[in-house]
Length: 144
Image (cartoon, rainbow, N blue to C red):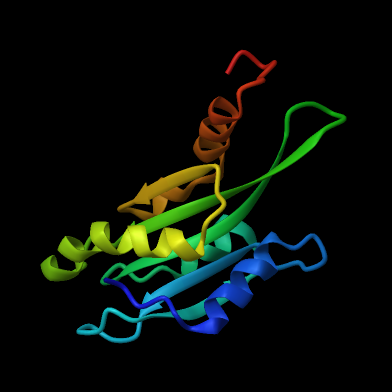
């Protein structure tokens, strides 16, 4: 089991979900290579591009992000995504544990529209994620 008991994680999660703050992503990393305890390692306001820059290719991490997009000129939507990052240089034992730990993380980062598995930073480009969010959201008038 992953230890997600750090109160800073829930506070940051609520911050991303709040309309009153600019924070639009959080990043959770393991305390160290041998630990199953997750800690809040970063938050930001620069969207997925800023988050991608913070990902370490030798680590497995979890991220939660607010994604804003428009369906047409008049409407904007905000959706939340859960990102399961396994860097290309991540150690084998960490890779093996991450699927089990994902269930524990989902107990804290509960509300999201899309789960995004990411193995390379390009997996977190905004446009393909918006396409998936539109498909998951149902009513799409763009033919997507």
